[in-house]
Amino acid sequence: MDLITPDFGLVFWTAITFLFLLLILRKFAWKPILGAVSDREEGIKNALKSAENARKEMENLHADNERILKEARAEREAMLKEAREIKNKMIEDAKDQAKEEANKLVAQAQASIETEKQAAIAELKSQVANLSIDIAEKVVREELSNKDKQIKLVESMLGEATLN
Amino acid sequence: MRLNTFKNVLFSVLFLAISFAGYAFENSDSKEGEEFNPKEMILHHVKDAHEFHLWDWKGRPVSLSLPIILWTDNGLTTFSSSKFHHDDNGKVIVEENGNKFVKFHEKIYQLEDNASVIEFDEEHHPINAHKPLNFSITRNVFMMWVSVVVLLLIFLTAARSYKKSSDGVPTGIAGFVEPLIVFVRDEIGKPMIGEHKYKRYMPYLLTIFFFIWINNIFGLIPILNGANLSGNIAFTCTLAVFTFIITTLSGNSNYWKHIFWMPGVPVPMKIFLMPIEIIGMFVKPISLMIRLFANITAGHVIILALMSLIFVFKTVAIAPVSVAFSLFITVIEIIVTAIQAYIFTILSALYFGMATEDHH
Image 1 (cartoon, each protein chain N blue to C red):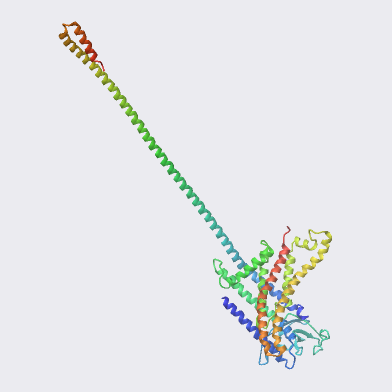
Image 2 (image 1 turned 90 degrees about the vertical axis):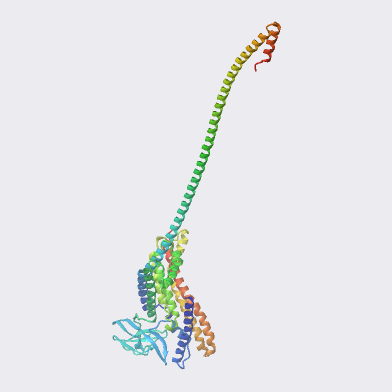
């Protein structure tokens, strides 16, 4: 029966000792230890979070770089295209101009050829006329005796001398 | 580190066996001619005592005398337990402060003025003496203070090491106790009480956990002759009362409603449940008290009983069996020291959690 009867003295000392231990440990042990542990846990949590943020930022930066690179590439592409276009246009223009010039030259040449031709024709005409007169003179001189012959000669000569 | 711990445990277990054997010898030797009484030896061992008996030397007990503090009609009376000259049968009478005291089966009696020998009736109640209020520093109280000193040394050192290190990384003993503290917080406090309210109860839970654990361990250390503090009902009773007080004081309206007017059941059921819940309020701490007391005491009793076999059978041949079995039980008891501390703490936390649970 002794075994299961709480002894008053021990209850008293246990209560006092336990309260003393609780108060001392609460103030000088549990508070600093639990504080340090939770501080550390907070620190770890924060560090993880900031690492995550840094990672995200890096990702953003990377995406930005990618975008800028893409833009630059597109710009280069556009510039090249423009240059090509300009080149083509310039060539085209030059061609046009050259053609025009050539046409002009051809036209000029044609015109001058025409005038030369006219002049030549005119000269030819005059020469033919002179020749005719010369021939006619000769014929006349030679054939003045024979009227028929005269006429025949003129006609044959004229026929030969077709203007071409 | 681990190997060292294991070695220490092994040594203490071996030591335990030797010391218990020695203790048993002492009992059988000192009462020569008398039959060895295992019950008496075991009960004497698991109960409290007024002196710290360490060992016998050449037939004389070597013991630490502890102060006896009594509150009598003549006021506070204090004297050393050595004045009883190791007598435990009420034969040596100590006269102090005008009163006469005797020690009988580790109880201090104050004799009536005219009495010279203590006498008992059939029910073992003293006829001519009474028990004064006894605040003596007994073996258990002494060991409790030793455990307090050890706890303070461990945890104050640990706390200081946190202050010293700037990055809060545990060093030295803090590295050893921190996992235990975090275990109490994460496996007992948080799940049982809840994320938001557990902080208030952490100092109590931590203190009670380590206080019970270290005293359980001290009870197993053989040279201390088993100061069986955590197997003493006064100790477990006091701690259970603390849990009860804290539970009752932190009970919210929801808790009291569940006790007196259970929501969600018909009225006759509410009336039926009320007395059950009121009884339950008290049964919870009582179960805490009995569980710890019975587990620790039973462990001590088993080890001592196995050792007593040698003296009951009066042969050394049985010794290997006794030692082997008590070694086995001792190893189990080492596990039980932690388990019982854990159970006491987790149930206390559970009761606090029930008392502070929000209505949902």
